[in-house]
Image 1 (cartoon, chains in turn brown, cyan):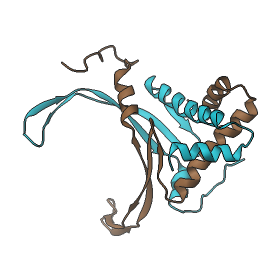
Image 2 (cartoon, helix red, strand yellow; image 1 turned 90 degrees about the vertical axis):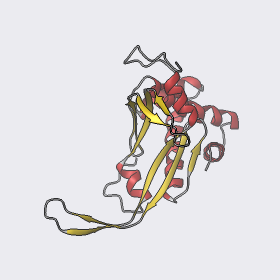
Image 3 (spheres, chains in turn red, blue; image 1 turned 45 degrees about the horizontal axis):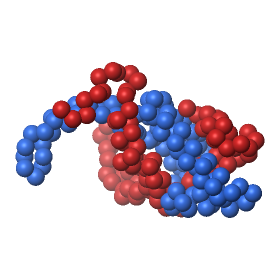
Length: 105
Length: 101
Protein backbone atom coordinates (compact mmCIF):
# COMPACT_ATOMS: atom_id res chain seq x y z
CA UNK A 1 0.00 0.00 0.00
CA UNK A 2 1.25 3.44 -0.87
CA UNK A 3 0.12 6.96 -0.08
CA UNK A 4 -1.82 6.96 -3.37
CA UNK A 5 -3.98 4.08 -2.14
CA UNK A 6 -4.59 5.77 1.20
CA UNK A 7 -5.71 8.85 -0.74
CA UNK A 8 -8.08 6.67 -2.83
CA UNK A 9 -9.64 5.23 0.31
CA UNK A 10 -10.30 8.67 1.81
CA UNK A 11 -11.56 9.93 -1.53
CA UNK A 12 -14.09 7.09 -1.67
CA UNK A 13 -15.16 7.65 1.93
CA UNK A 14 -15.71 11.41 1.91
CA UNK A 15 -17.32 12.93 -1.12
CA UNK A 16 -14.85 15.57 -2.18
CA UNK A 17 -12.39 15.95 -5.00
CA UNK A 18 -9.31 13.83 -5.49
CA UNK A 19 -7.19 16.96 -5.25
CA UNK A 20 -8.67 17.81 -1.90
CA UNK A 21 -8.28 14.26 -0.58
CA UNK A 22 -4.63 14.37 -1.66
CA UNK A 23 -4.06 17.68 0.11
CA UNK A 24 -5.60 16.52 3.37
CA UNK A 25 -3.69 13.21 3.46
CA UNK A 26 -0.42 14.99 2.65
CA UNK A 27 -1.14 17.56 5.35
CA UNK A 28 -1.83 14.83 7.90
CA UNK A 29 1.58 13.22 7.45
CA UNK A 30 3.17 16.65 7.28
CA UNK A 31 1.69 17.63 10.65
CA UNK A 32 2.83 14.35 12.23
CA UNK A 33 6.36 14.84 10.89
CA UNK A 34 6.53 18.42 12.16
CA UNK A 35 5.63 17.34 15.67
CA UNK A 36 8.10 14.43 15.65
CA UNK A 37 10.80 16.77 14.41
CA UNK A 38 10.24 18.88 17.52
CA UNK A 39 10.79 15.76 19.60
CA UNK A 40 7.13 15.39 20.52
CA UNK A 41 5.34 12.10 20.96
CA UNK A 42 2.52 11.39 18.54
CA UNK A 43 -0.15 9.09 19.95
CA UNK A 44 -2.78 7.70 17.60
CA UNK A 45 -5.30 5.70 19.59
CA UNK A 46 -6.13 2.37 17.98
CA UNK A 47 -2.94 2.52 15.94
CA UNK A 48 0.12 3.23 18.03
CA UNK A 49 2.56 5.77 19.42
CA UNK A 50 5.48 7.35 17.62
CA UNK A 51 8.14 8.24 20.15
CA UNK A 52 11.44 10.09 19.74
CA UNK A 53 14.19 8.57 21.87
CA UNK A 54 17.63 10.01 22.56
CA UNK A 55 20.59 7.66 22.26
CA UNK A 56 23.69 8.62 24.20
CA UNK A 57 27.10 8.39 22.51
CA UNK A 58 28.87 5.08 22.92
CA UNK A 59 32.13 3.45 22.04
CA UNK A 60 32.21 1.16 19.07
CA UNK A 61 34.82 -0.58 17.03
CA UNK A 62 35.35 -0.75 13.33
CA UNK A 63 35.08 -4.50 12.85
CA UNK A 64 37.41 -4.42 9.88
CA UNK A 65 40.31 -2.53 11.39
CA UNK A 66 39.68 -3.03 15.11
CA UNK A 67 39.95 0.70 15.52
CA UNK A 68 37.97 2.19 18.38
CA UNK A 69 35.54 4.92 17.43
CA UNK A 70 32.91 6.99 19.20
CA UNK A 71 29.40 6.52 17.93
CA UNK A 72 27.72 9.88 18.32
CA UNK A 73 24.54 10.36 20.31
CA UNK A 74 21.47 10.75 18.18
CA UNK A 75 17.72 10.87 18.20
CA UNK A 76 15.76 7.95 16.84
CA UNK A 77 12.11 7.42 16.13
CA UNK A 78 10.39 4.30 17.39
CA UNK A 79 6.88 3.04 16.84
CA UNK A 80 5.01 1.24 19.58
CA UNK A 81 1.92 -0.47 18.15
CA UNK A 82 -1.25 -0.17 20.18
CA UNK A 83 -2.78 -3.15 21.90
CA UNK A 84 -5.77 -2.85 19.55
CA UNK A 85 -3.57 -3.07 16.44
CA UNK A 86 -1.69 -6.06 17.84
CA UNK A 87 -4.95 -7.78 18.61
CA UNK A 88 -6.50 -7.13 15.23
CA UNK A 89 -3.42 -8.65 13.57
CA UNK A 90 -3.80 -11.79 15.62
CA UNK A 91 -7.55 -12.26 15.57
CA UNK A 92 -7.98 -11.96 11.84
CA UNK A 93 -7.01 -15.07 9.86
CA UNK A 94 -3.56 -14.89 8.38
CA UNK A 95 -3.65 -14.74 4.56
CA UNK A 96 -0.48 -16.79 4.22
CA UNK A 97 -1.33 -19.67 6.55
CA UNK A 98 -4.61 -21.36 7.42
CA UNK A 99 -3.46 -22.57 10.83
CA UNK A 100 -4.13 -19.53 12.97
CA UNK A 101 -7.39 -20.49 14.64
CA UNK A 102 -5.84 -21.65 17.92
CA UNK A 103 -6.05 -18.65 20.21
CA UNK A 104 -6.23 -20.54 23.48
CA UNK A 105 -5.88 -24.26 23.83
CA UNK B 1 0.15 15.06 20.25
CA UNK B 2 -2.87 12.79 20.25
CA UNK B 3 -5.23 11.86 17.47
CA UNK B 4 -7.59 14.56 18.69
CA UNK B 5 -4.87 17.22 18.36
CA UNK B 6 -4.08 15.92 14.89
CA UNK B 7 -7.73 16.22 13.86
CA UNK B 8 -7.84 19.78 15.27
CA UNK B 9 -4.74 20.78 13.36
CA UNK B 10 -6.00 19.30 10.08
CA UNK B 11 -9.26 21.14 10.70
CA UNK B 12 -7.39 24.42 11.17
CA UNK B 13 -5.53 23.95 7.89
CA UNK B 14 -8.74 23.19 6.02
CA UNK B 15 -11.31 25.51 7.58
CA UNK B 16 -14.01 24.59 5.07
CA UNK B 17 -14.04 20.97 6.31
CA UNK B 18 -16.35 20.17 9.16
CA UNK B 19 -14.76 18.76 12.27
CA UNK B 20 -16.63 15.55 11.51
CA UNK B 21 -15.09 15.38 8.01
CA UNK B 22 -11.60 15.79 9.45
CA UNK B 23 -12.30 13.07 11.95
CA UNK B 24 -13.57 10.70 9.26
CA UNK B 25 -10.50 11.37 7.12
CA UNK B 26 -7.99 10.74 9.90
CA UNK B 27 -9.81 7.58 10.94
CA UNK B 28 -9.91 6.41 7.32
CA UNK B 29 -6.17 6.99 6.88
CA UNK B 30 -5.22 4.90 9.90
CA UNK B 31 -8.06 2.43 9.34
CA UNK B 32 -6.89 1.70 5.80
CA UNK B 33 -3.37 1.17 7.13
CA UNK B 34 -4.63 -1.31 9.73
CA UNK B 35 -6.60 -3.14 7.00
CA UNK B 36 -3.48 -3.36 4.84
CA UNK B 37 -1.49 -4.79 7.73
CA UNK B 38 -4.20 -7.38 8.36
CA UNK B 39 -3.74 -8.45 4.74
CA UNK B 40 0.01 -8.49 5.45
CA UNK B 41 0.55 -5.88 2.84
CA UNK B 42 3.61 -3.72 3.16
CA UNK B 43 2.79 -0.02 3.57
CA UNK B 44 5.21 2.51 2.22
CA UNK B 45 4.77 6.22 2.78
CA UNK B 46 7.41 8.29 1.05
CA UNK B 47 9.22 10.65 3.38
CA UNK B 48 7.70 8.98 6.43
CA UNK B 49 8.50 5.29 6.63
CA UNK B 50 7.21 1.81 6.01
CA UNK B 51 5.21 -0.72 7.97
CA UNK B 52 5.58 -4.47 7.60
CA UNK B 53 4.05 -7.38 9.47
CA UNK B 54 6.52 -9.88 10.88
CA UNK B 55 5.79 -13.39 11.98
CA UNK B 56 6.89 -14.67 15.35
CA UNK B 57 6.98 -18.42 15.82
CA UNK B 58 5.44 -20.14 18.82
CA UNK B 59 7.92 -20.59 21.62
CA UNK B 60 8.11 -21.73 25.16
CA UNK B 61 8.35 -19.05 27.80
CA UNK B 62 8.29 -18.73 31.54
CA UNK B 63 6.20 -16.74 33.90
CA UNK B 64 8.96 -14.63 35.50
CA UNK B 65 7.08 -14.45 38.79
CA UNK B 66 6.36 -18.13 39.32
CA UNK B 67 8.83 -19.77 36.96
CA UNK B 68 6.01 -21.81 35.46
CA UNK B 69 6.52 -22.89 31.87
CA UNK B 70 4.00 -21.34 29.54
CA UNK B 71 3.67 -21.63 25.81
CA UNK B 72 3.68 -18.46 23.75
CA UNK B 73 1.71 -19.01 20.56
CA UNK B 74 2.76 -17.83 17.13
CA UNK B 75 1.78 -14.26 16.39
CA UNK B 76 2.04 -11.46 13.92
CA UNK B 77 3.59 -8.17 14.97
CA UNK B 78 3.60 -4.82 13.18
CA UNK B 79 7.00 -3.29 12.56
CA UNK B 80 7.83 0.27 11.53
CA UNK B 81 10.97 1.38 9.76
CA UNK B 82 11.49 5.13 9.69
CA UNK B 83 12.15 6.68 6.27
CA UNK B 84 15.33 8.54 5.51
CA UNK B 85 13.87 12.03 5.38
CA UNK B 86 12.05 11.70 8.70
CA UNK B 87 15.01 9.97 10.35
CA UNK B 88 17.18 12.95 9.45
CA UNK B 89 14.58 15.50 10.51
CA UNK B 90 14.07 13.83 13.89
CA UNK B 91 17.83 13.92 14.42
CA UNK B 92 17.91 17.58 13.33
CA UNK B 93 20.22 16.79 10.43
CA UNK B 94 20.13 18.69 7.20
CA UNK B 95 18.30 16.48 4.70
CA UNK B 96 20.62 15.81 1.77
CA UNK B 97 17.85 16.14 -0.74
CA UNK B 98 14.43 17.75 -0.67
CA UNK B 99 11.73 15.75 -2.38
CA UNK B 100 8.85 17.94 -1.38
CA UNK B 101 6.53 19.48 -3.91
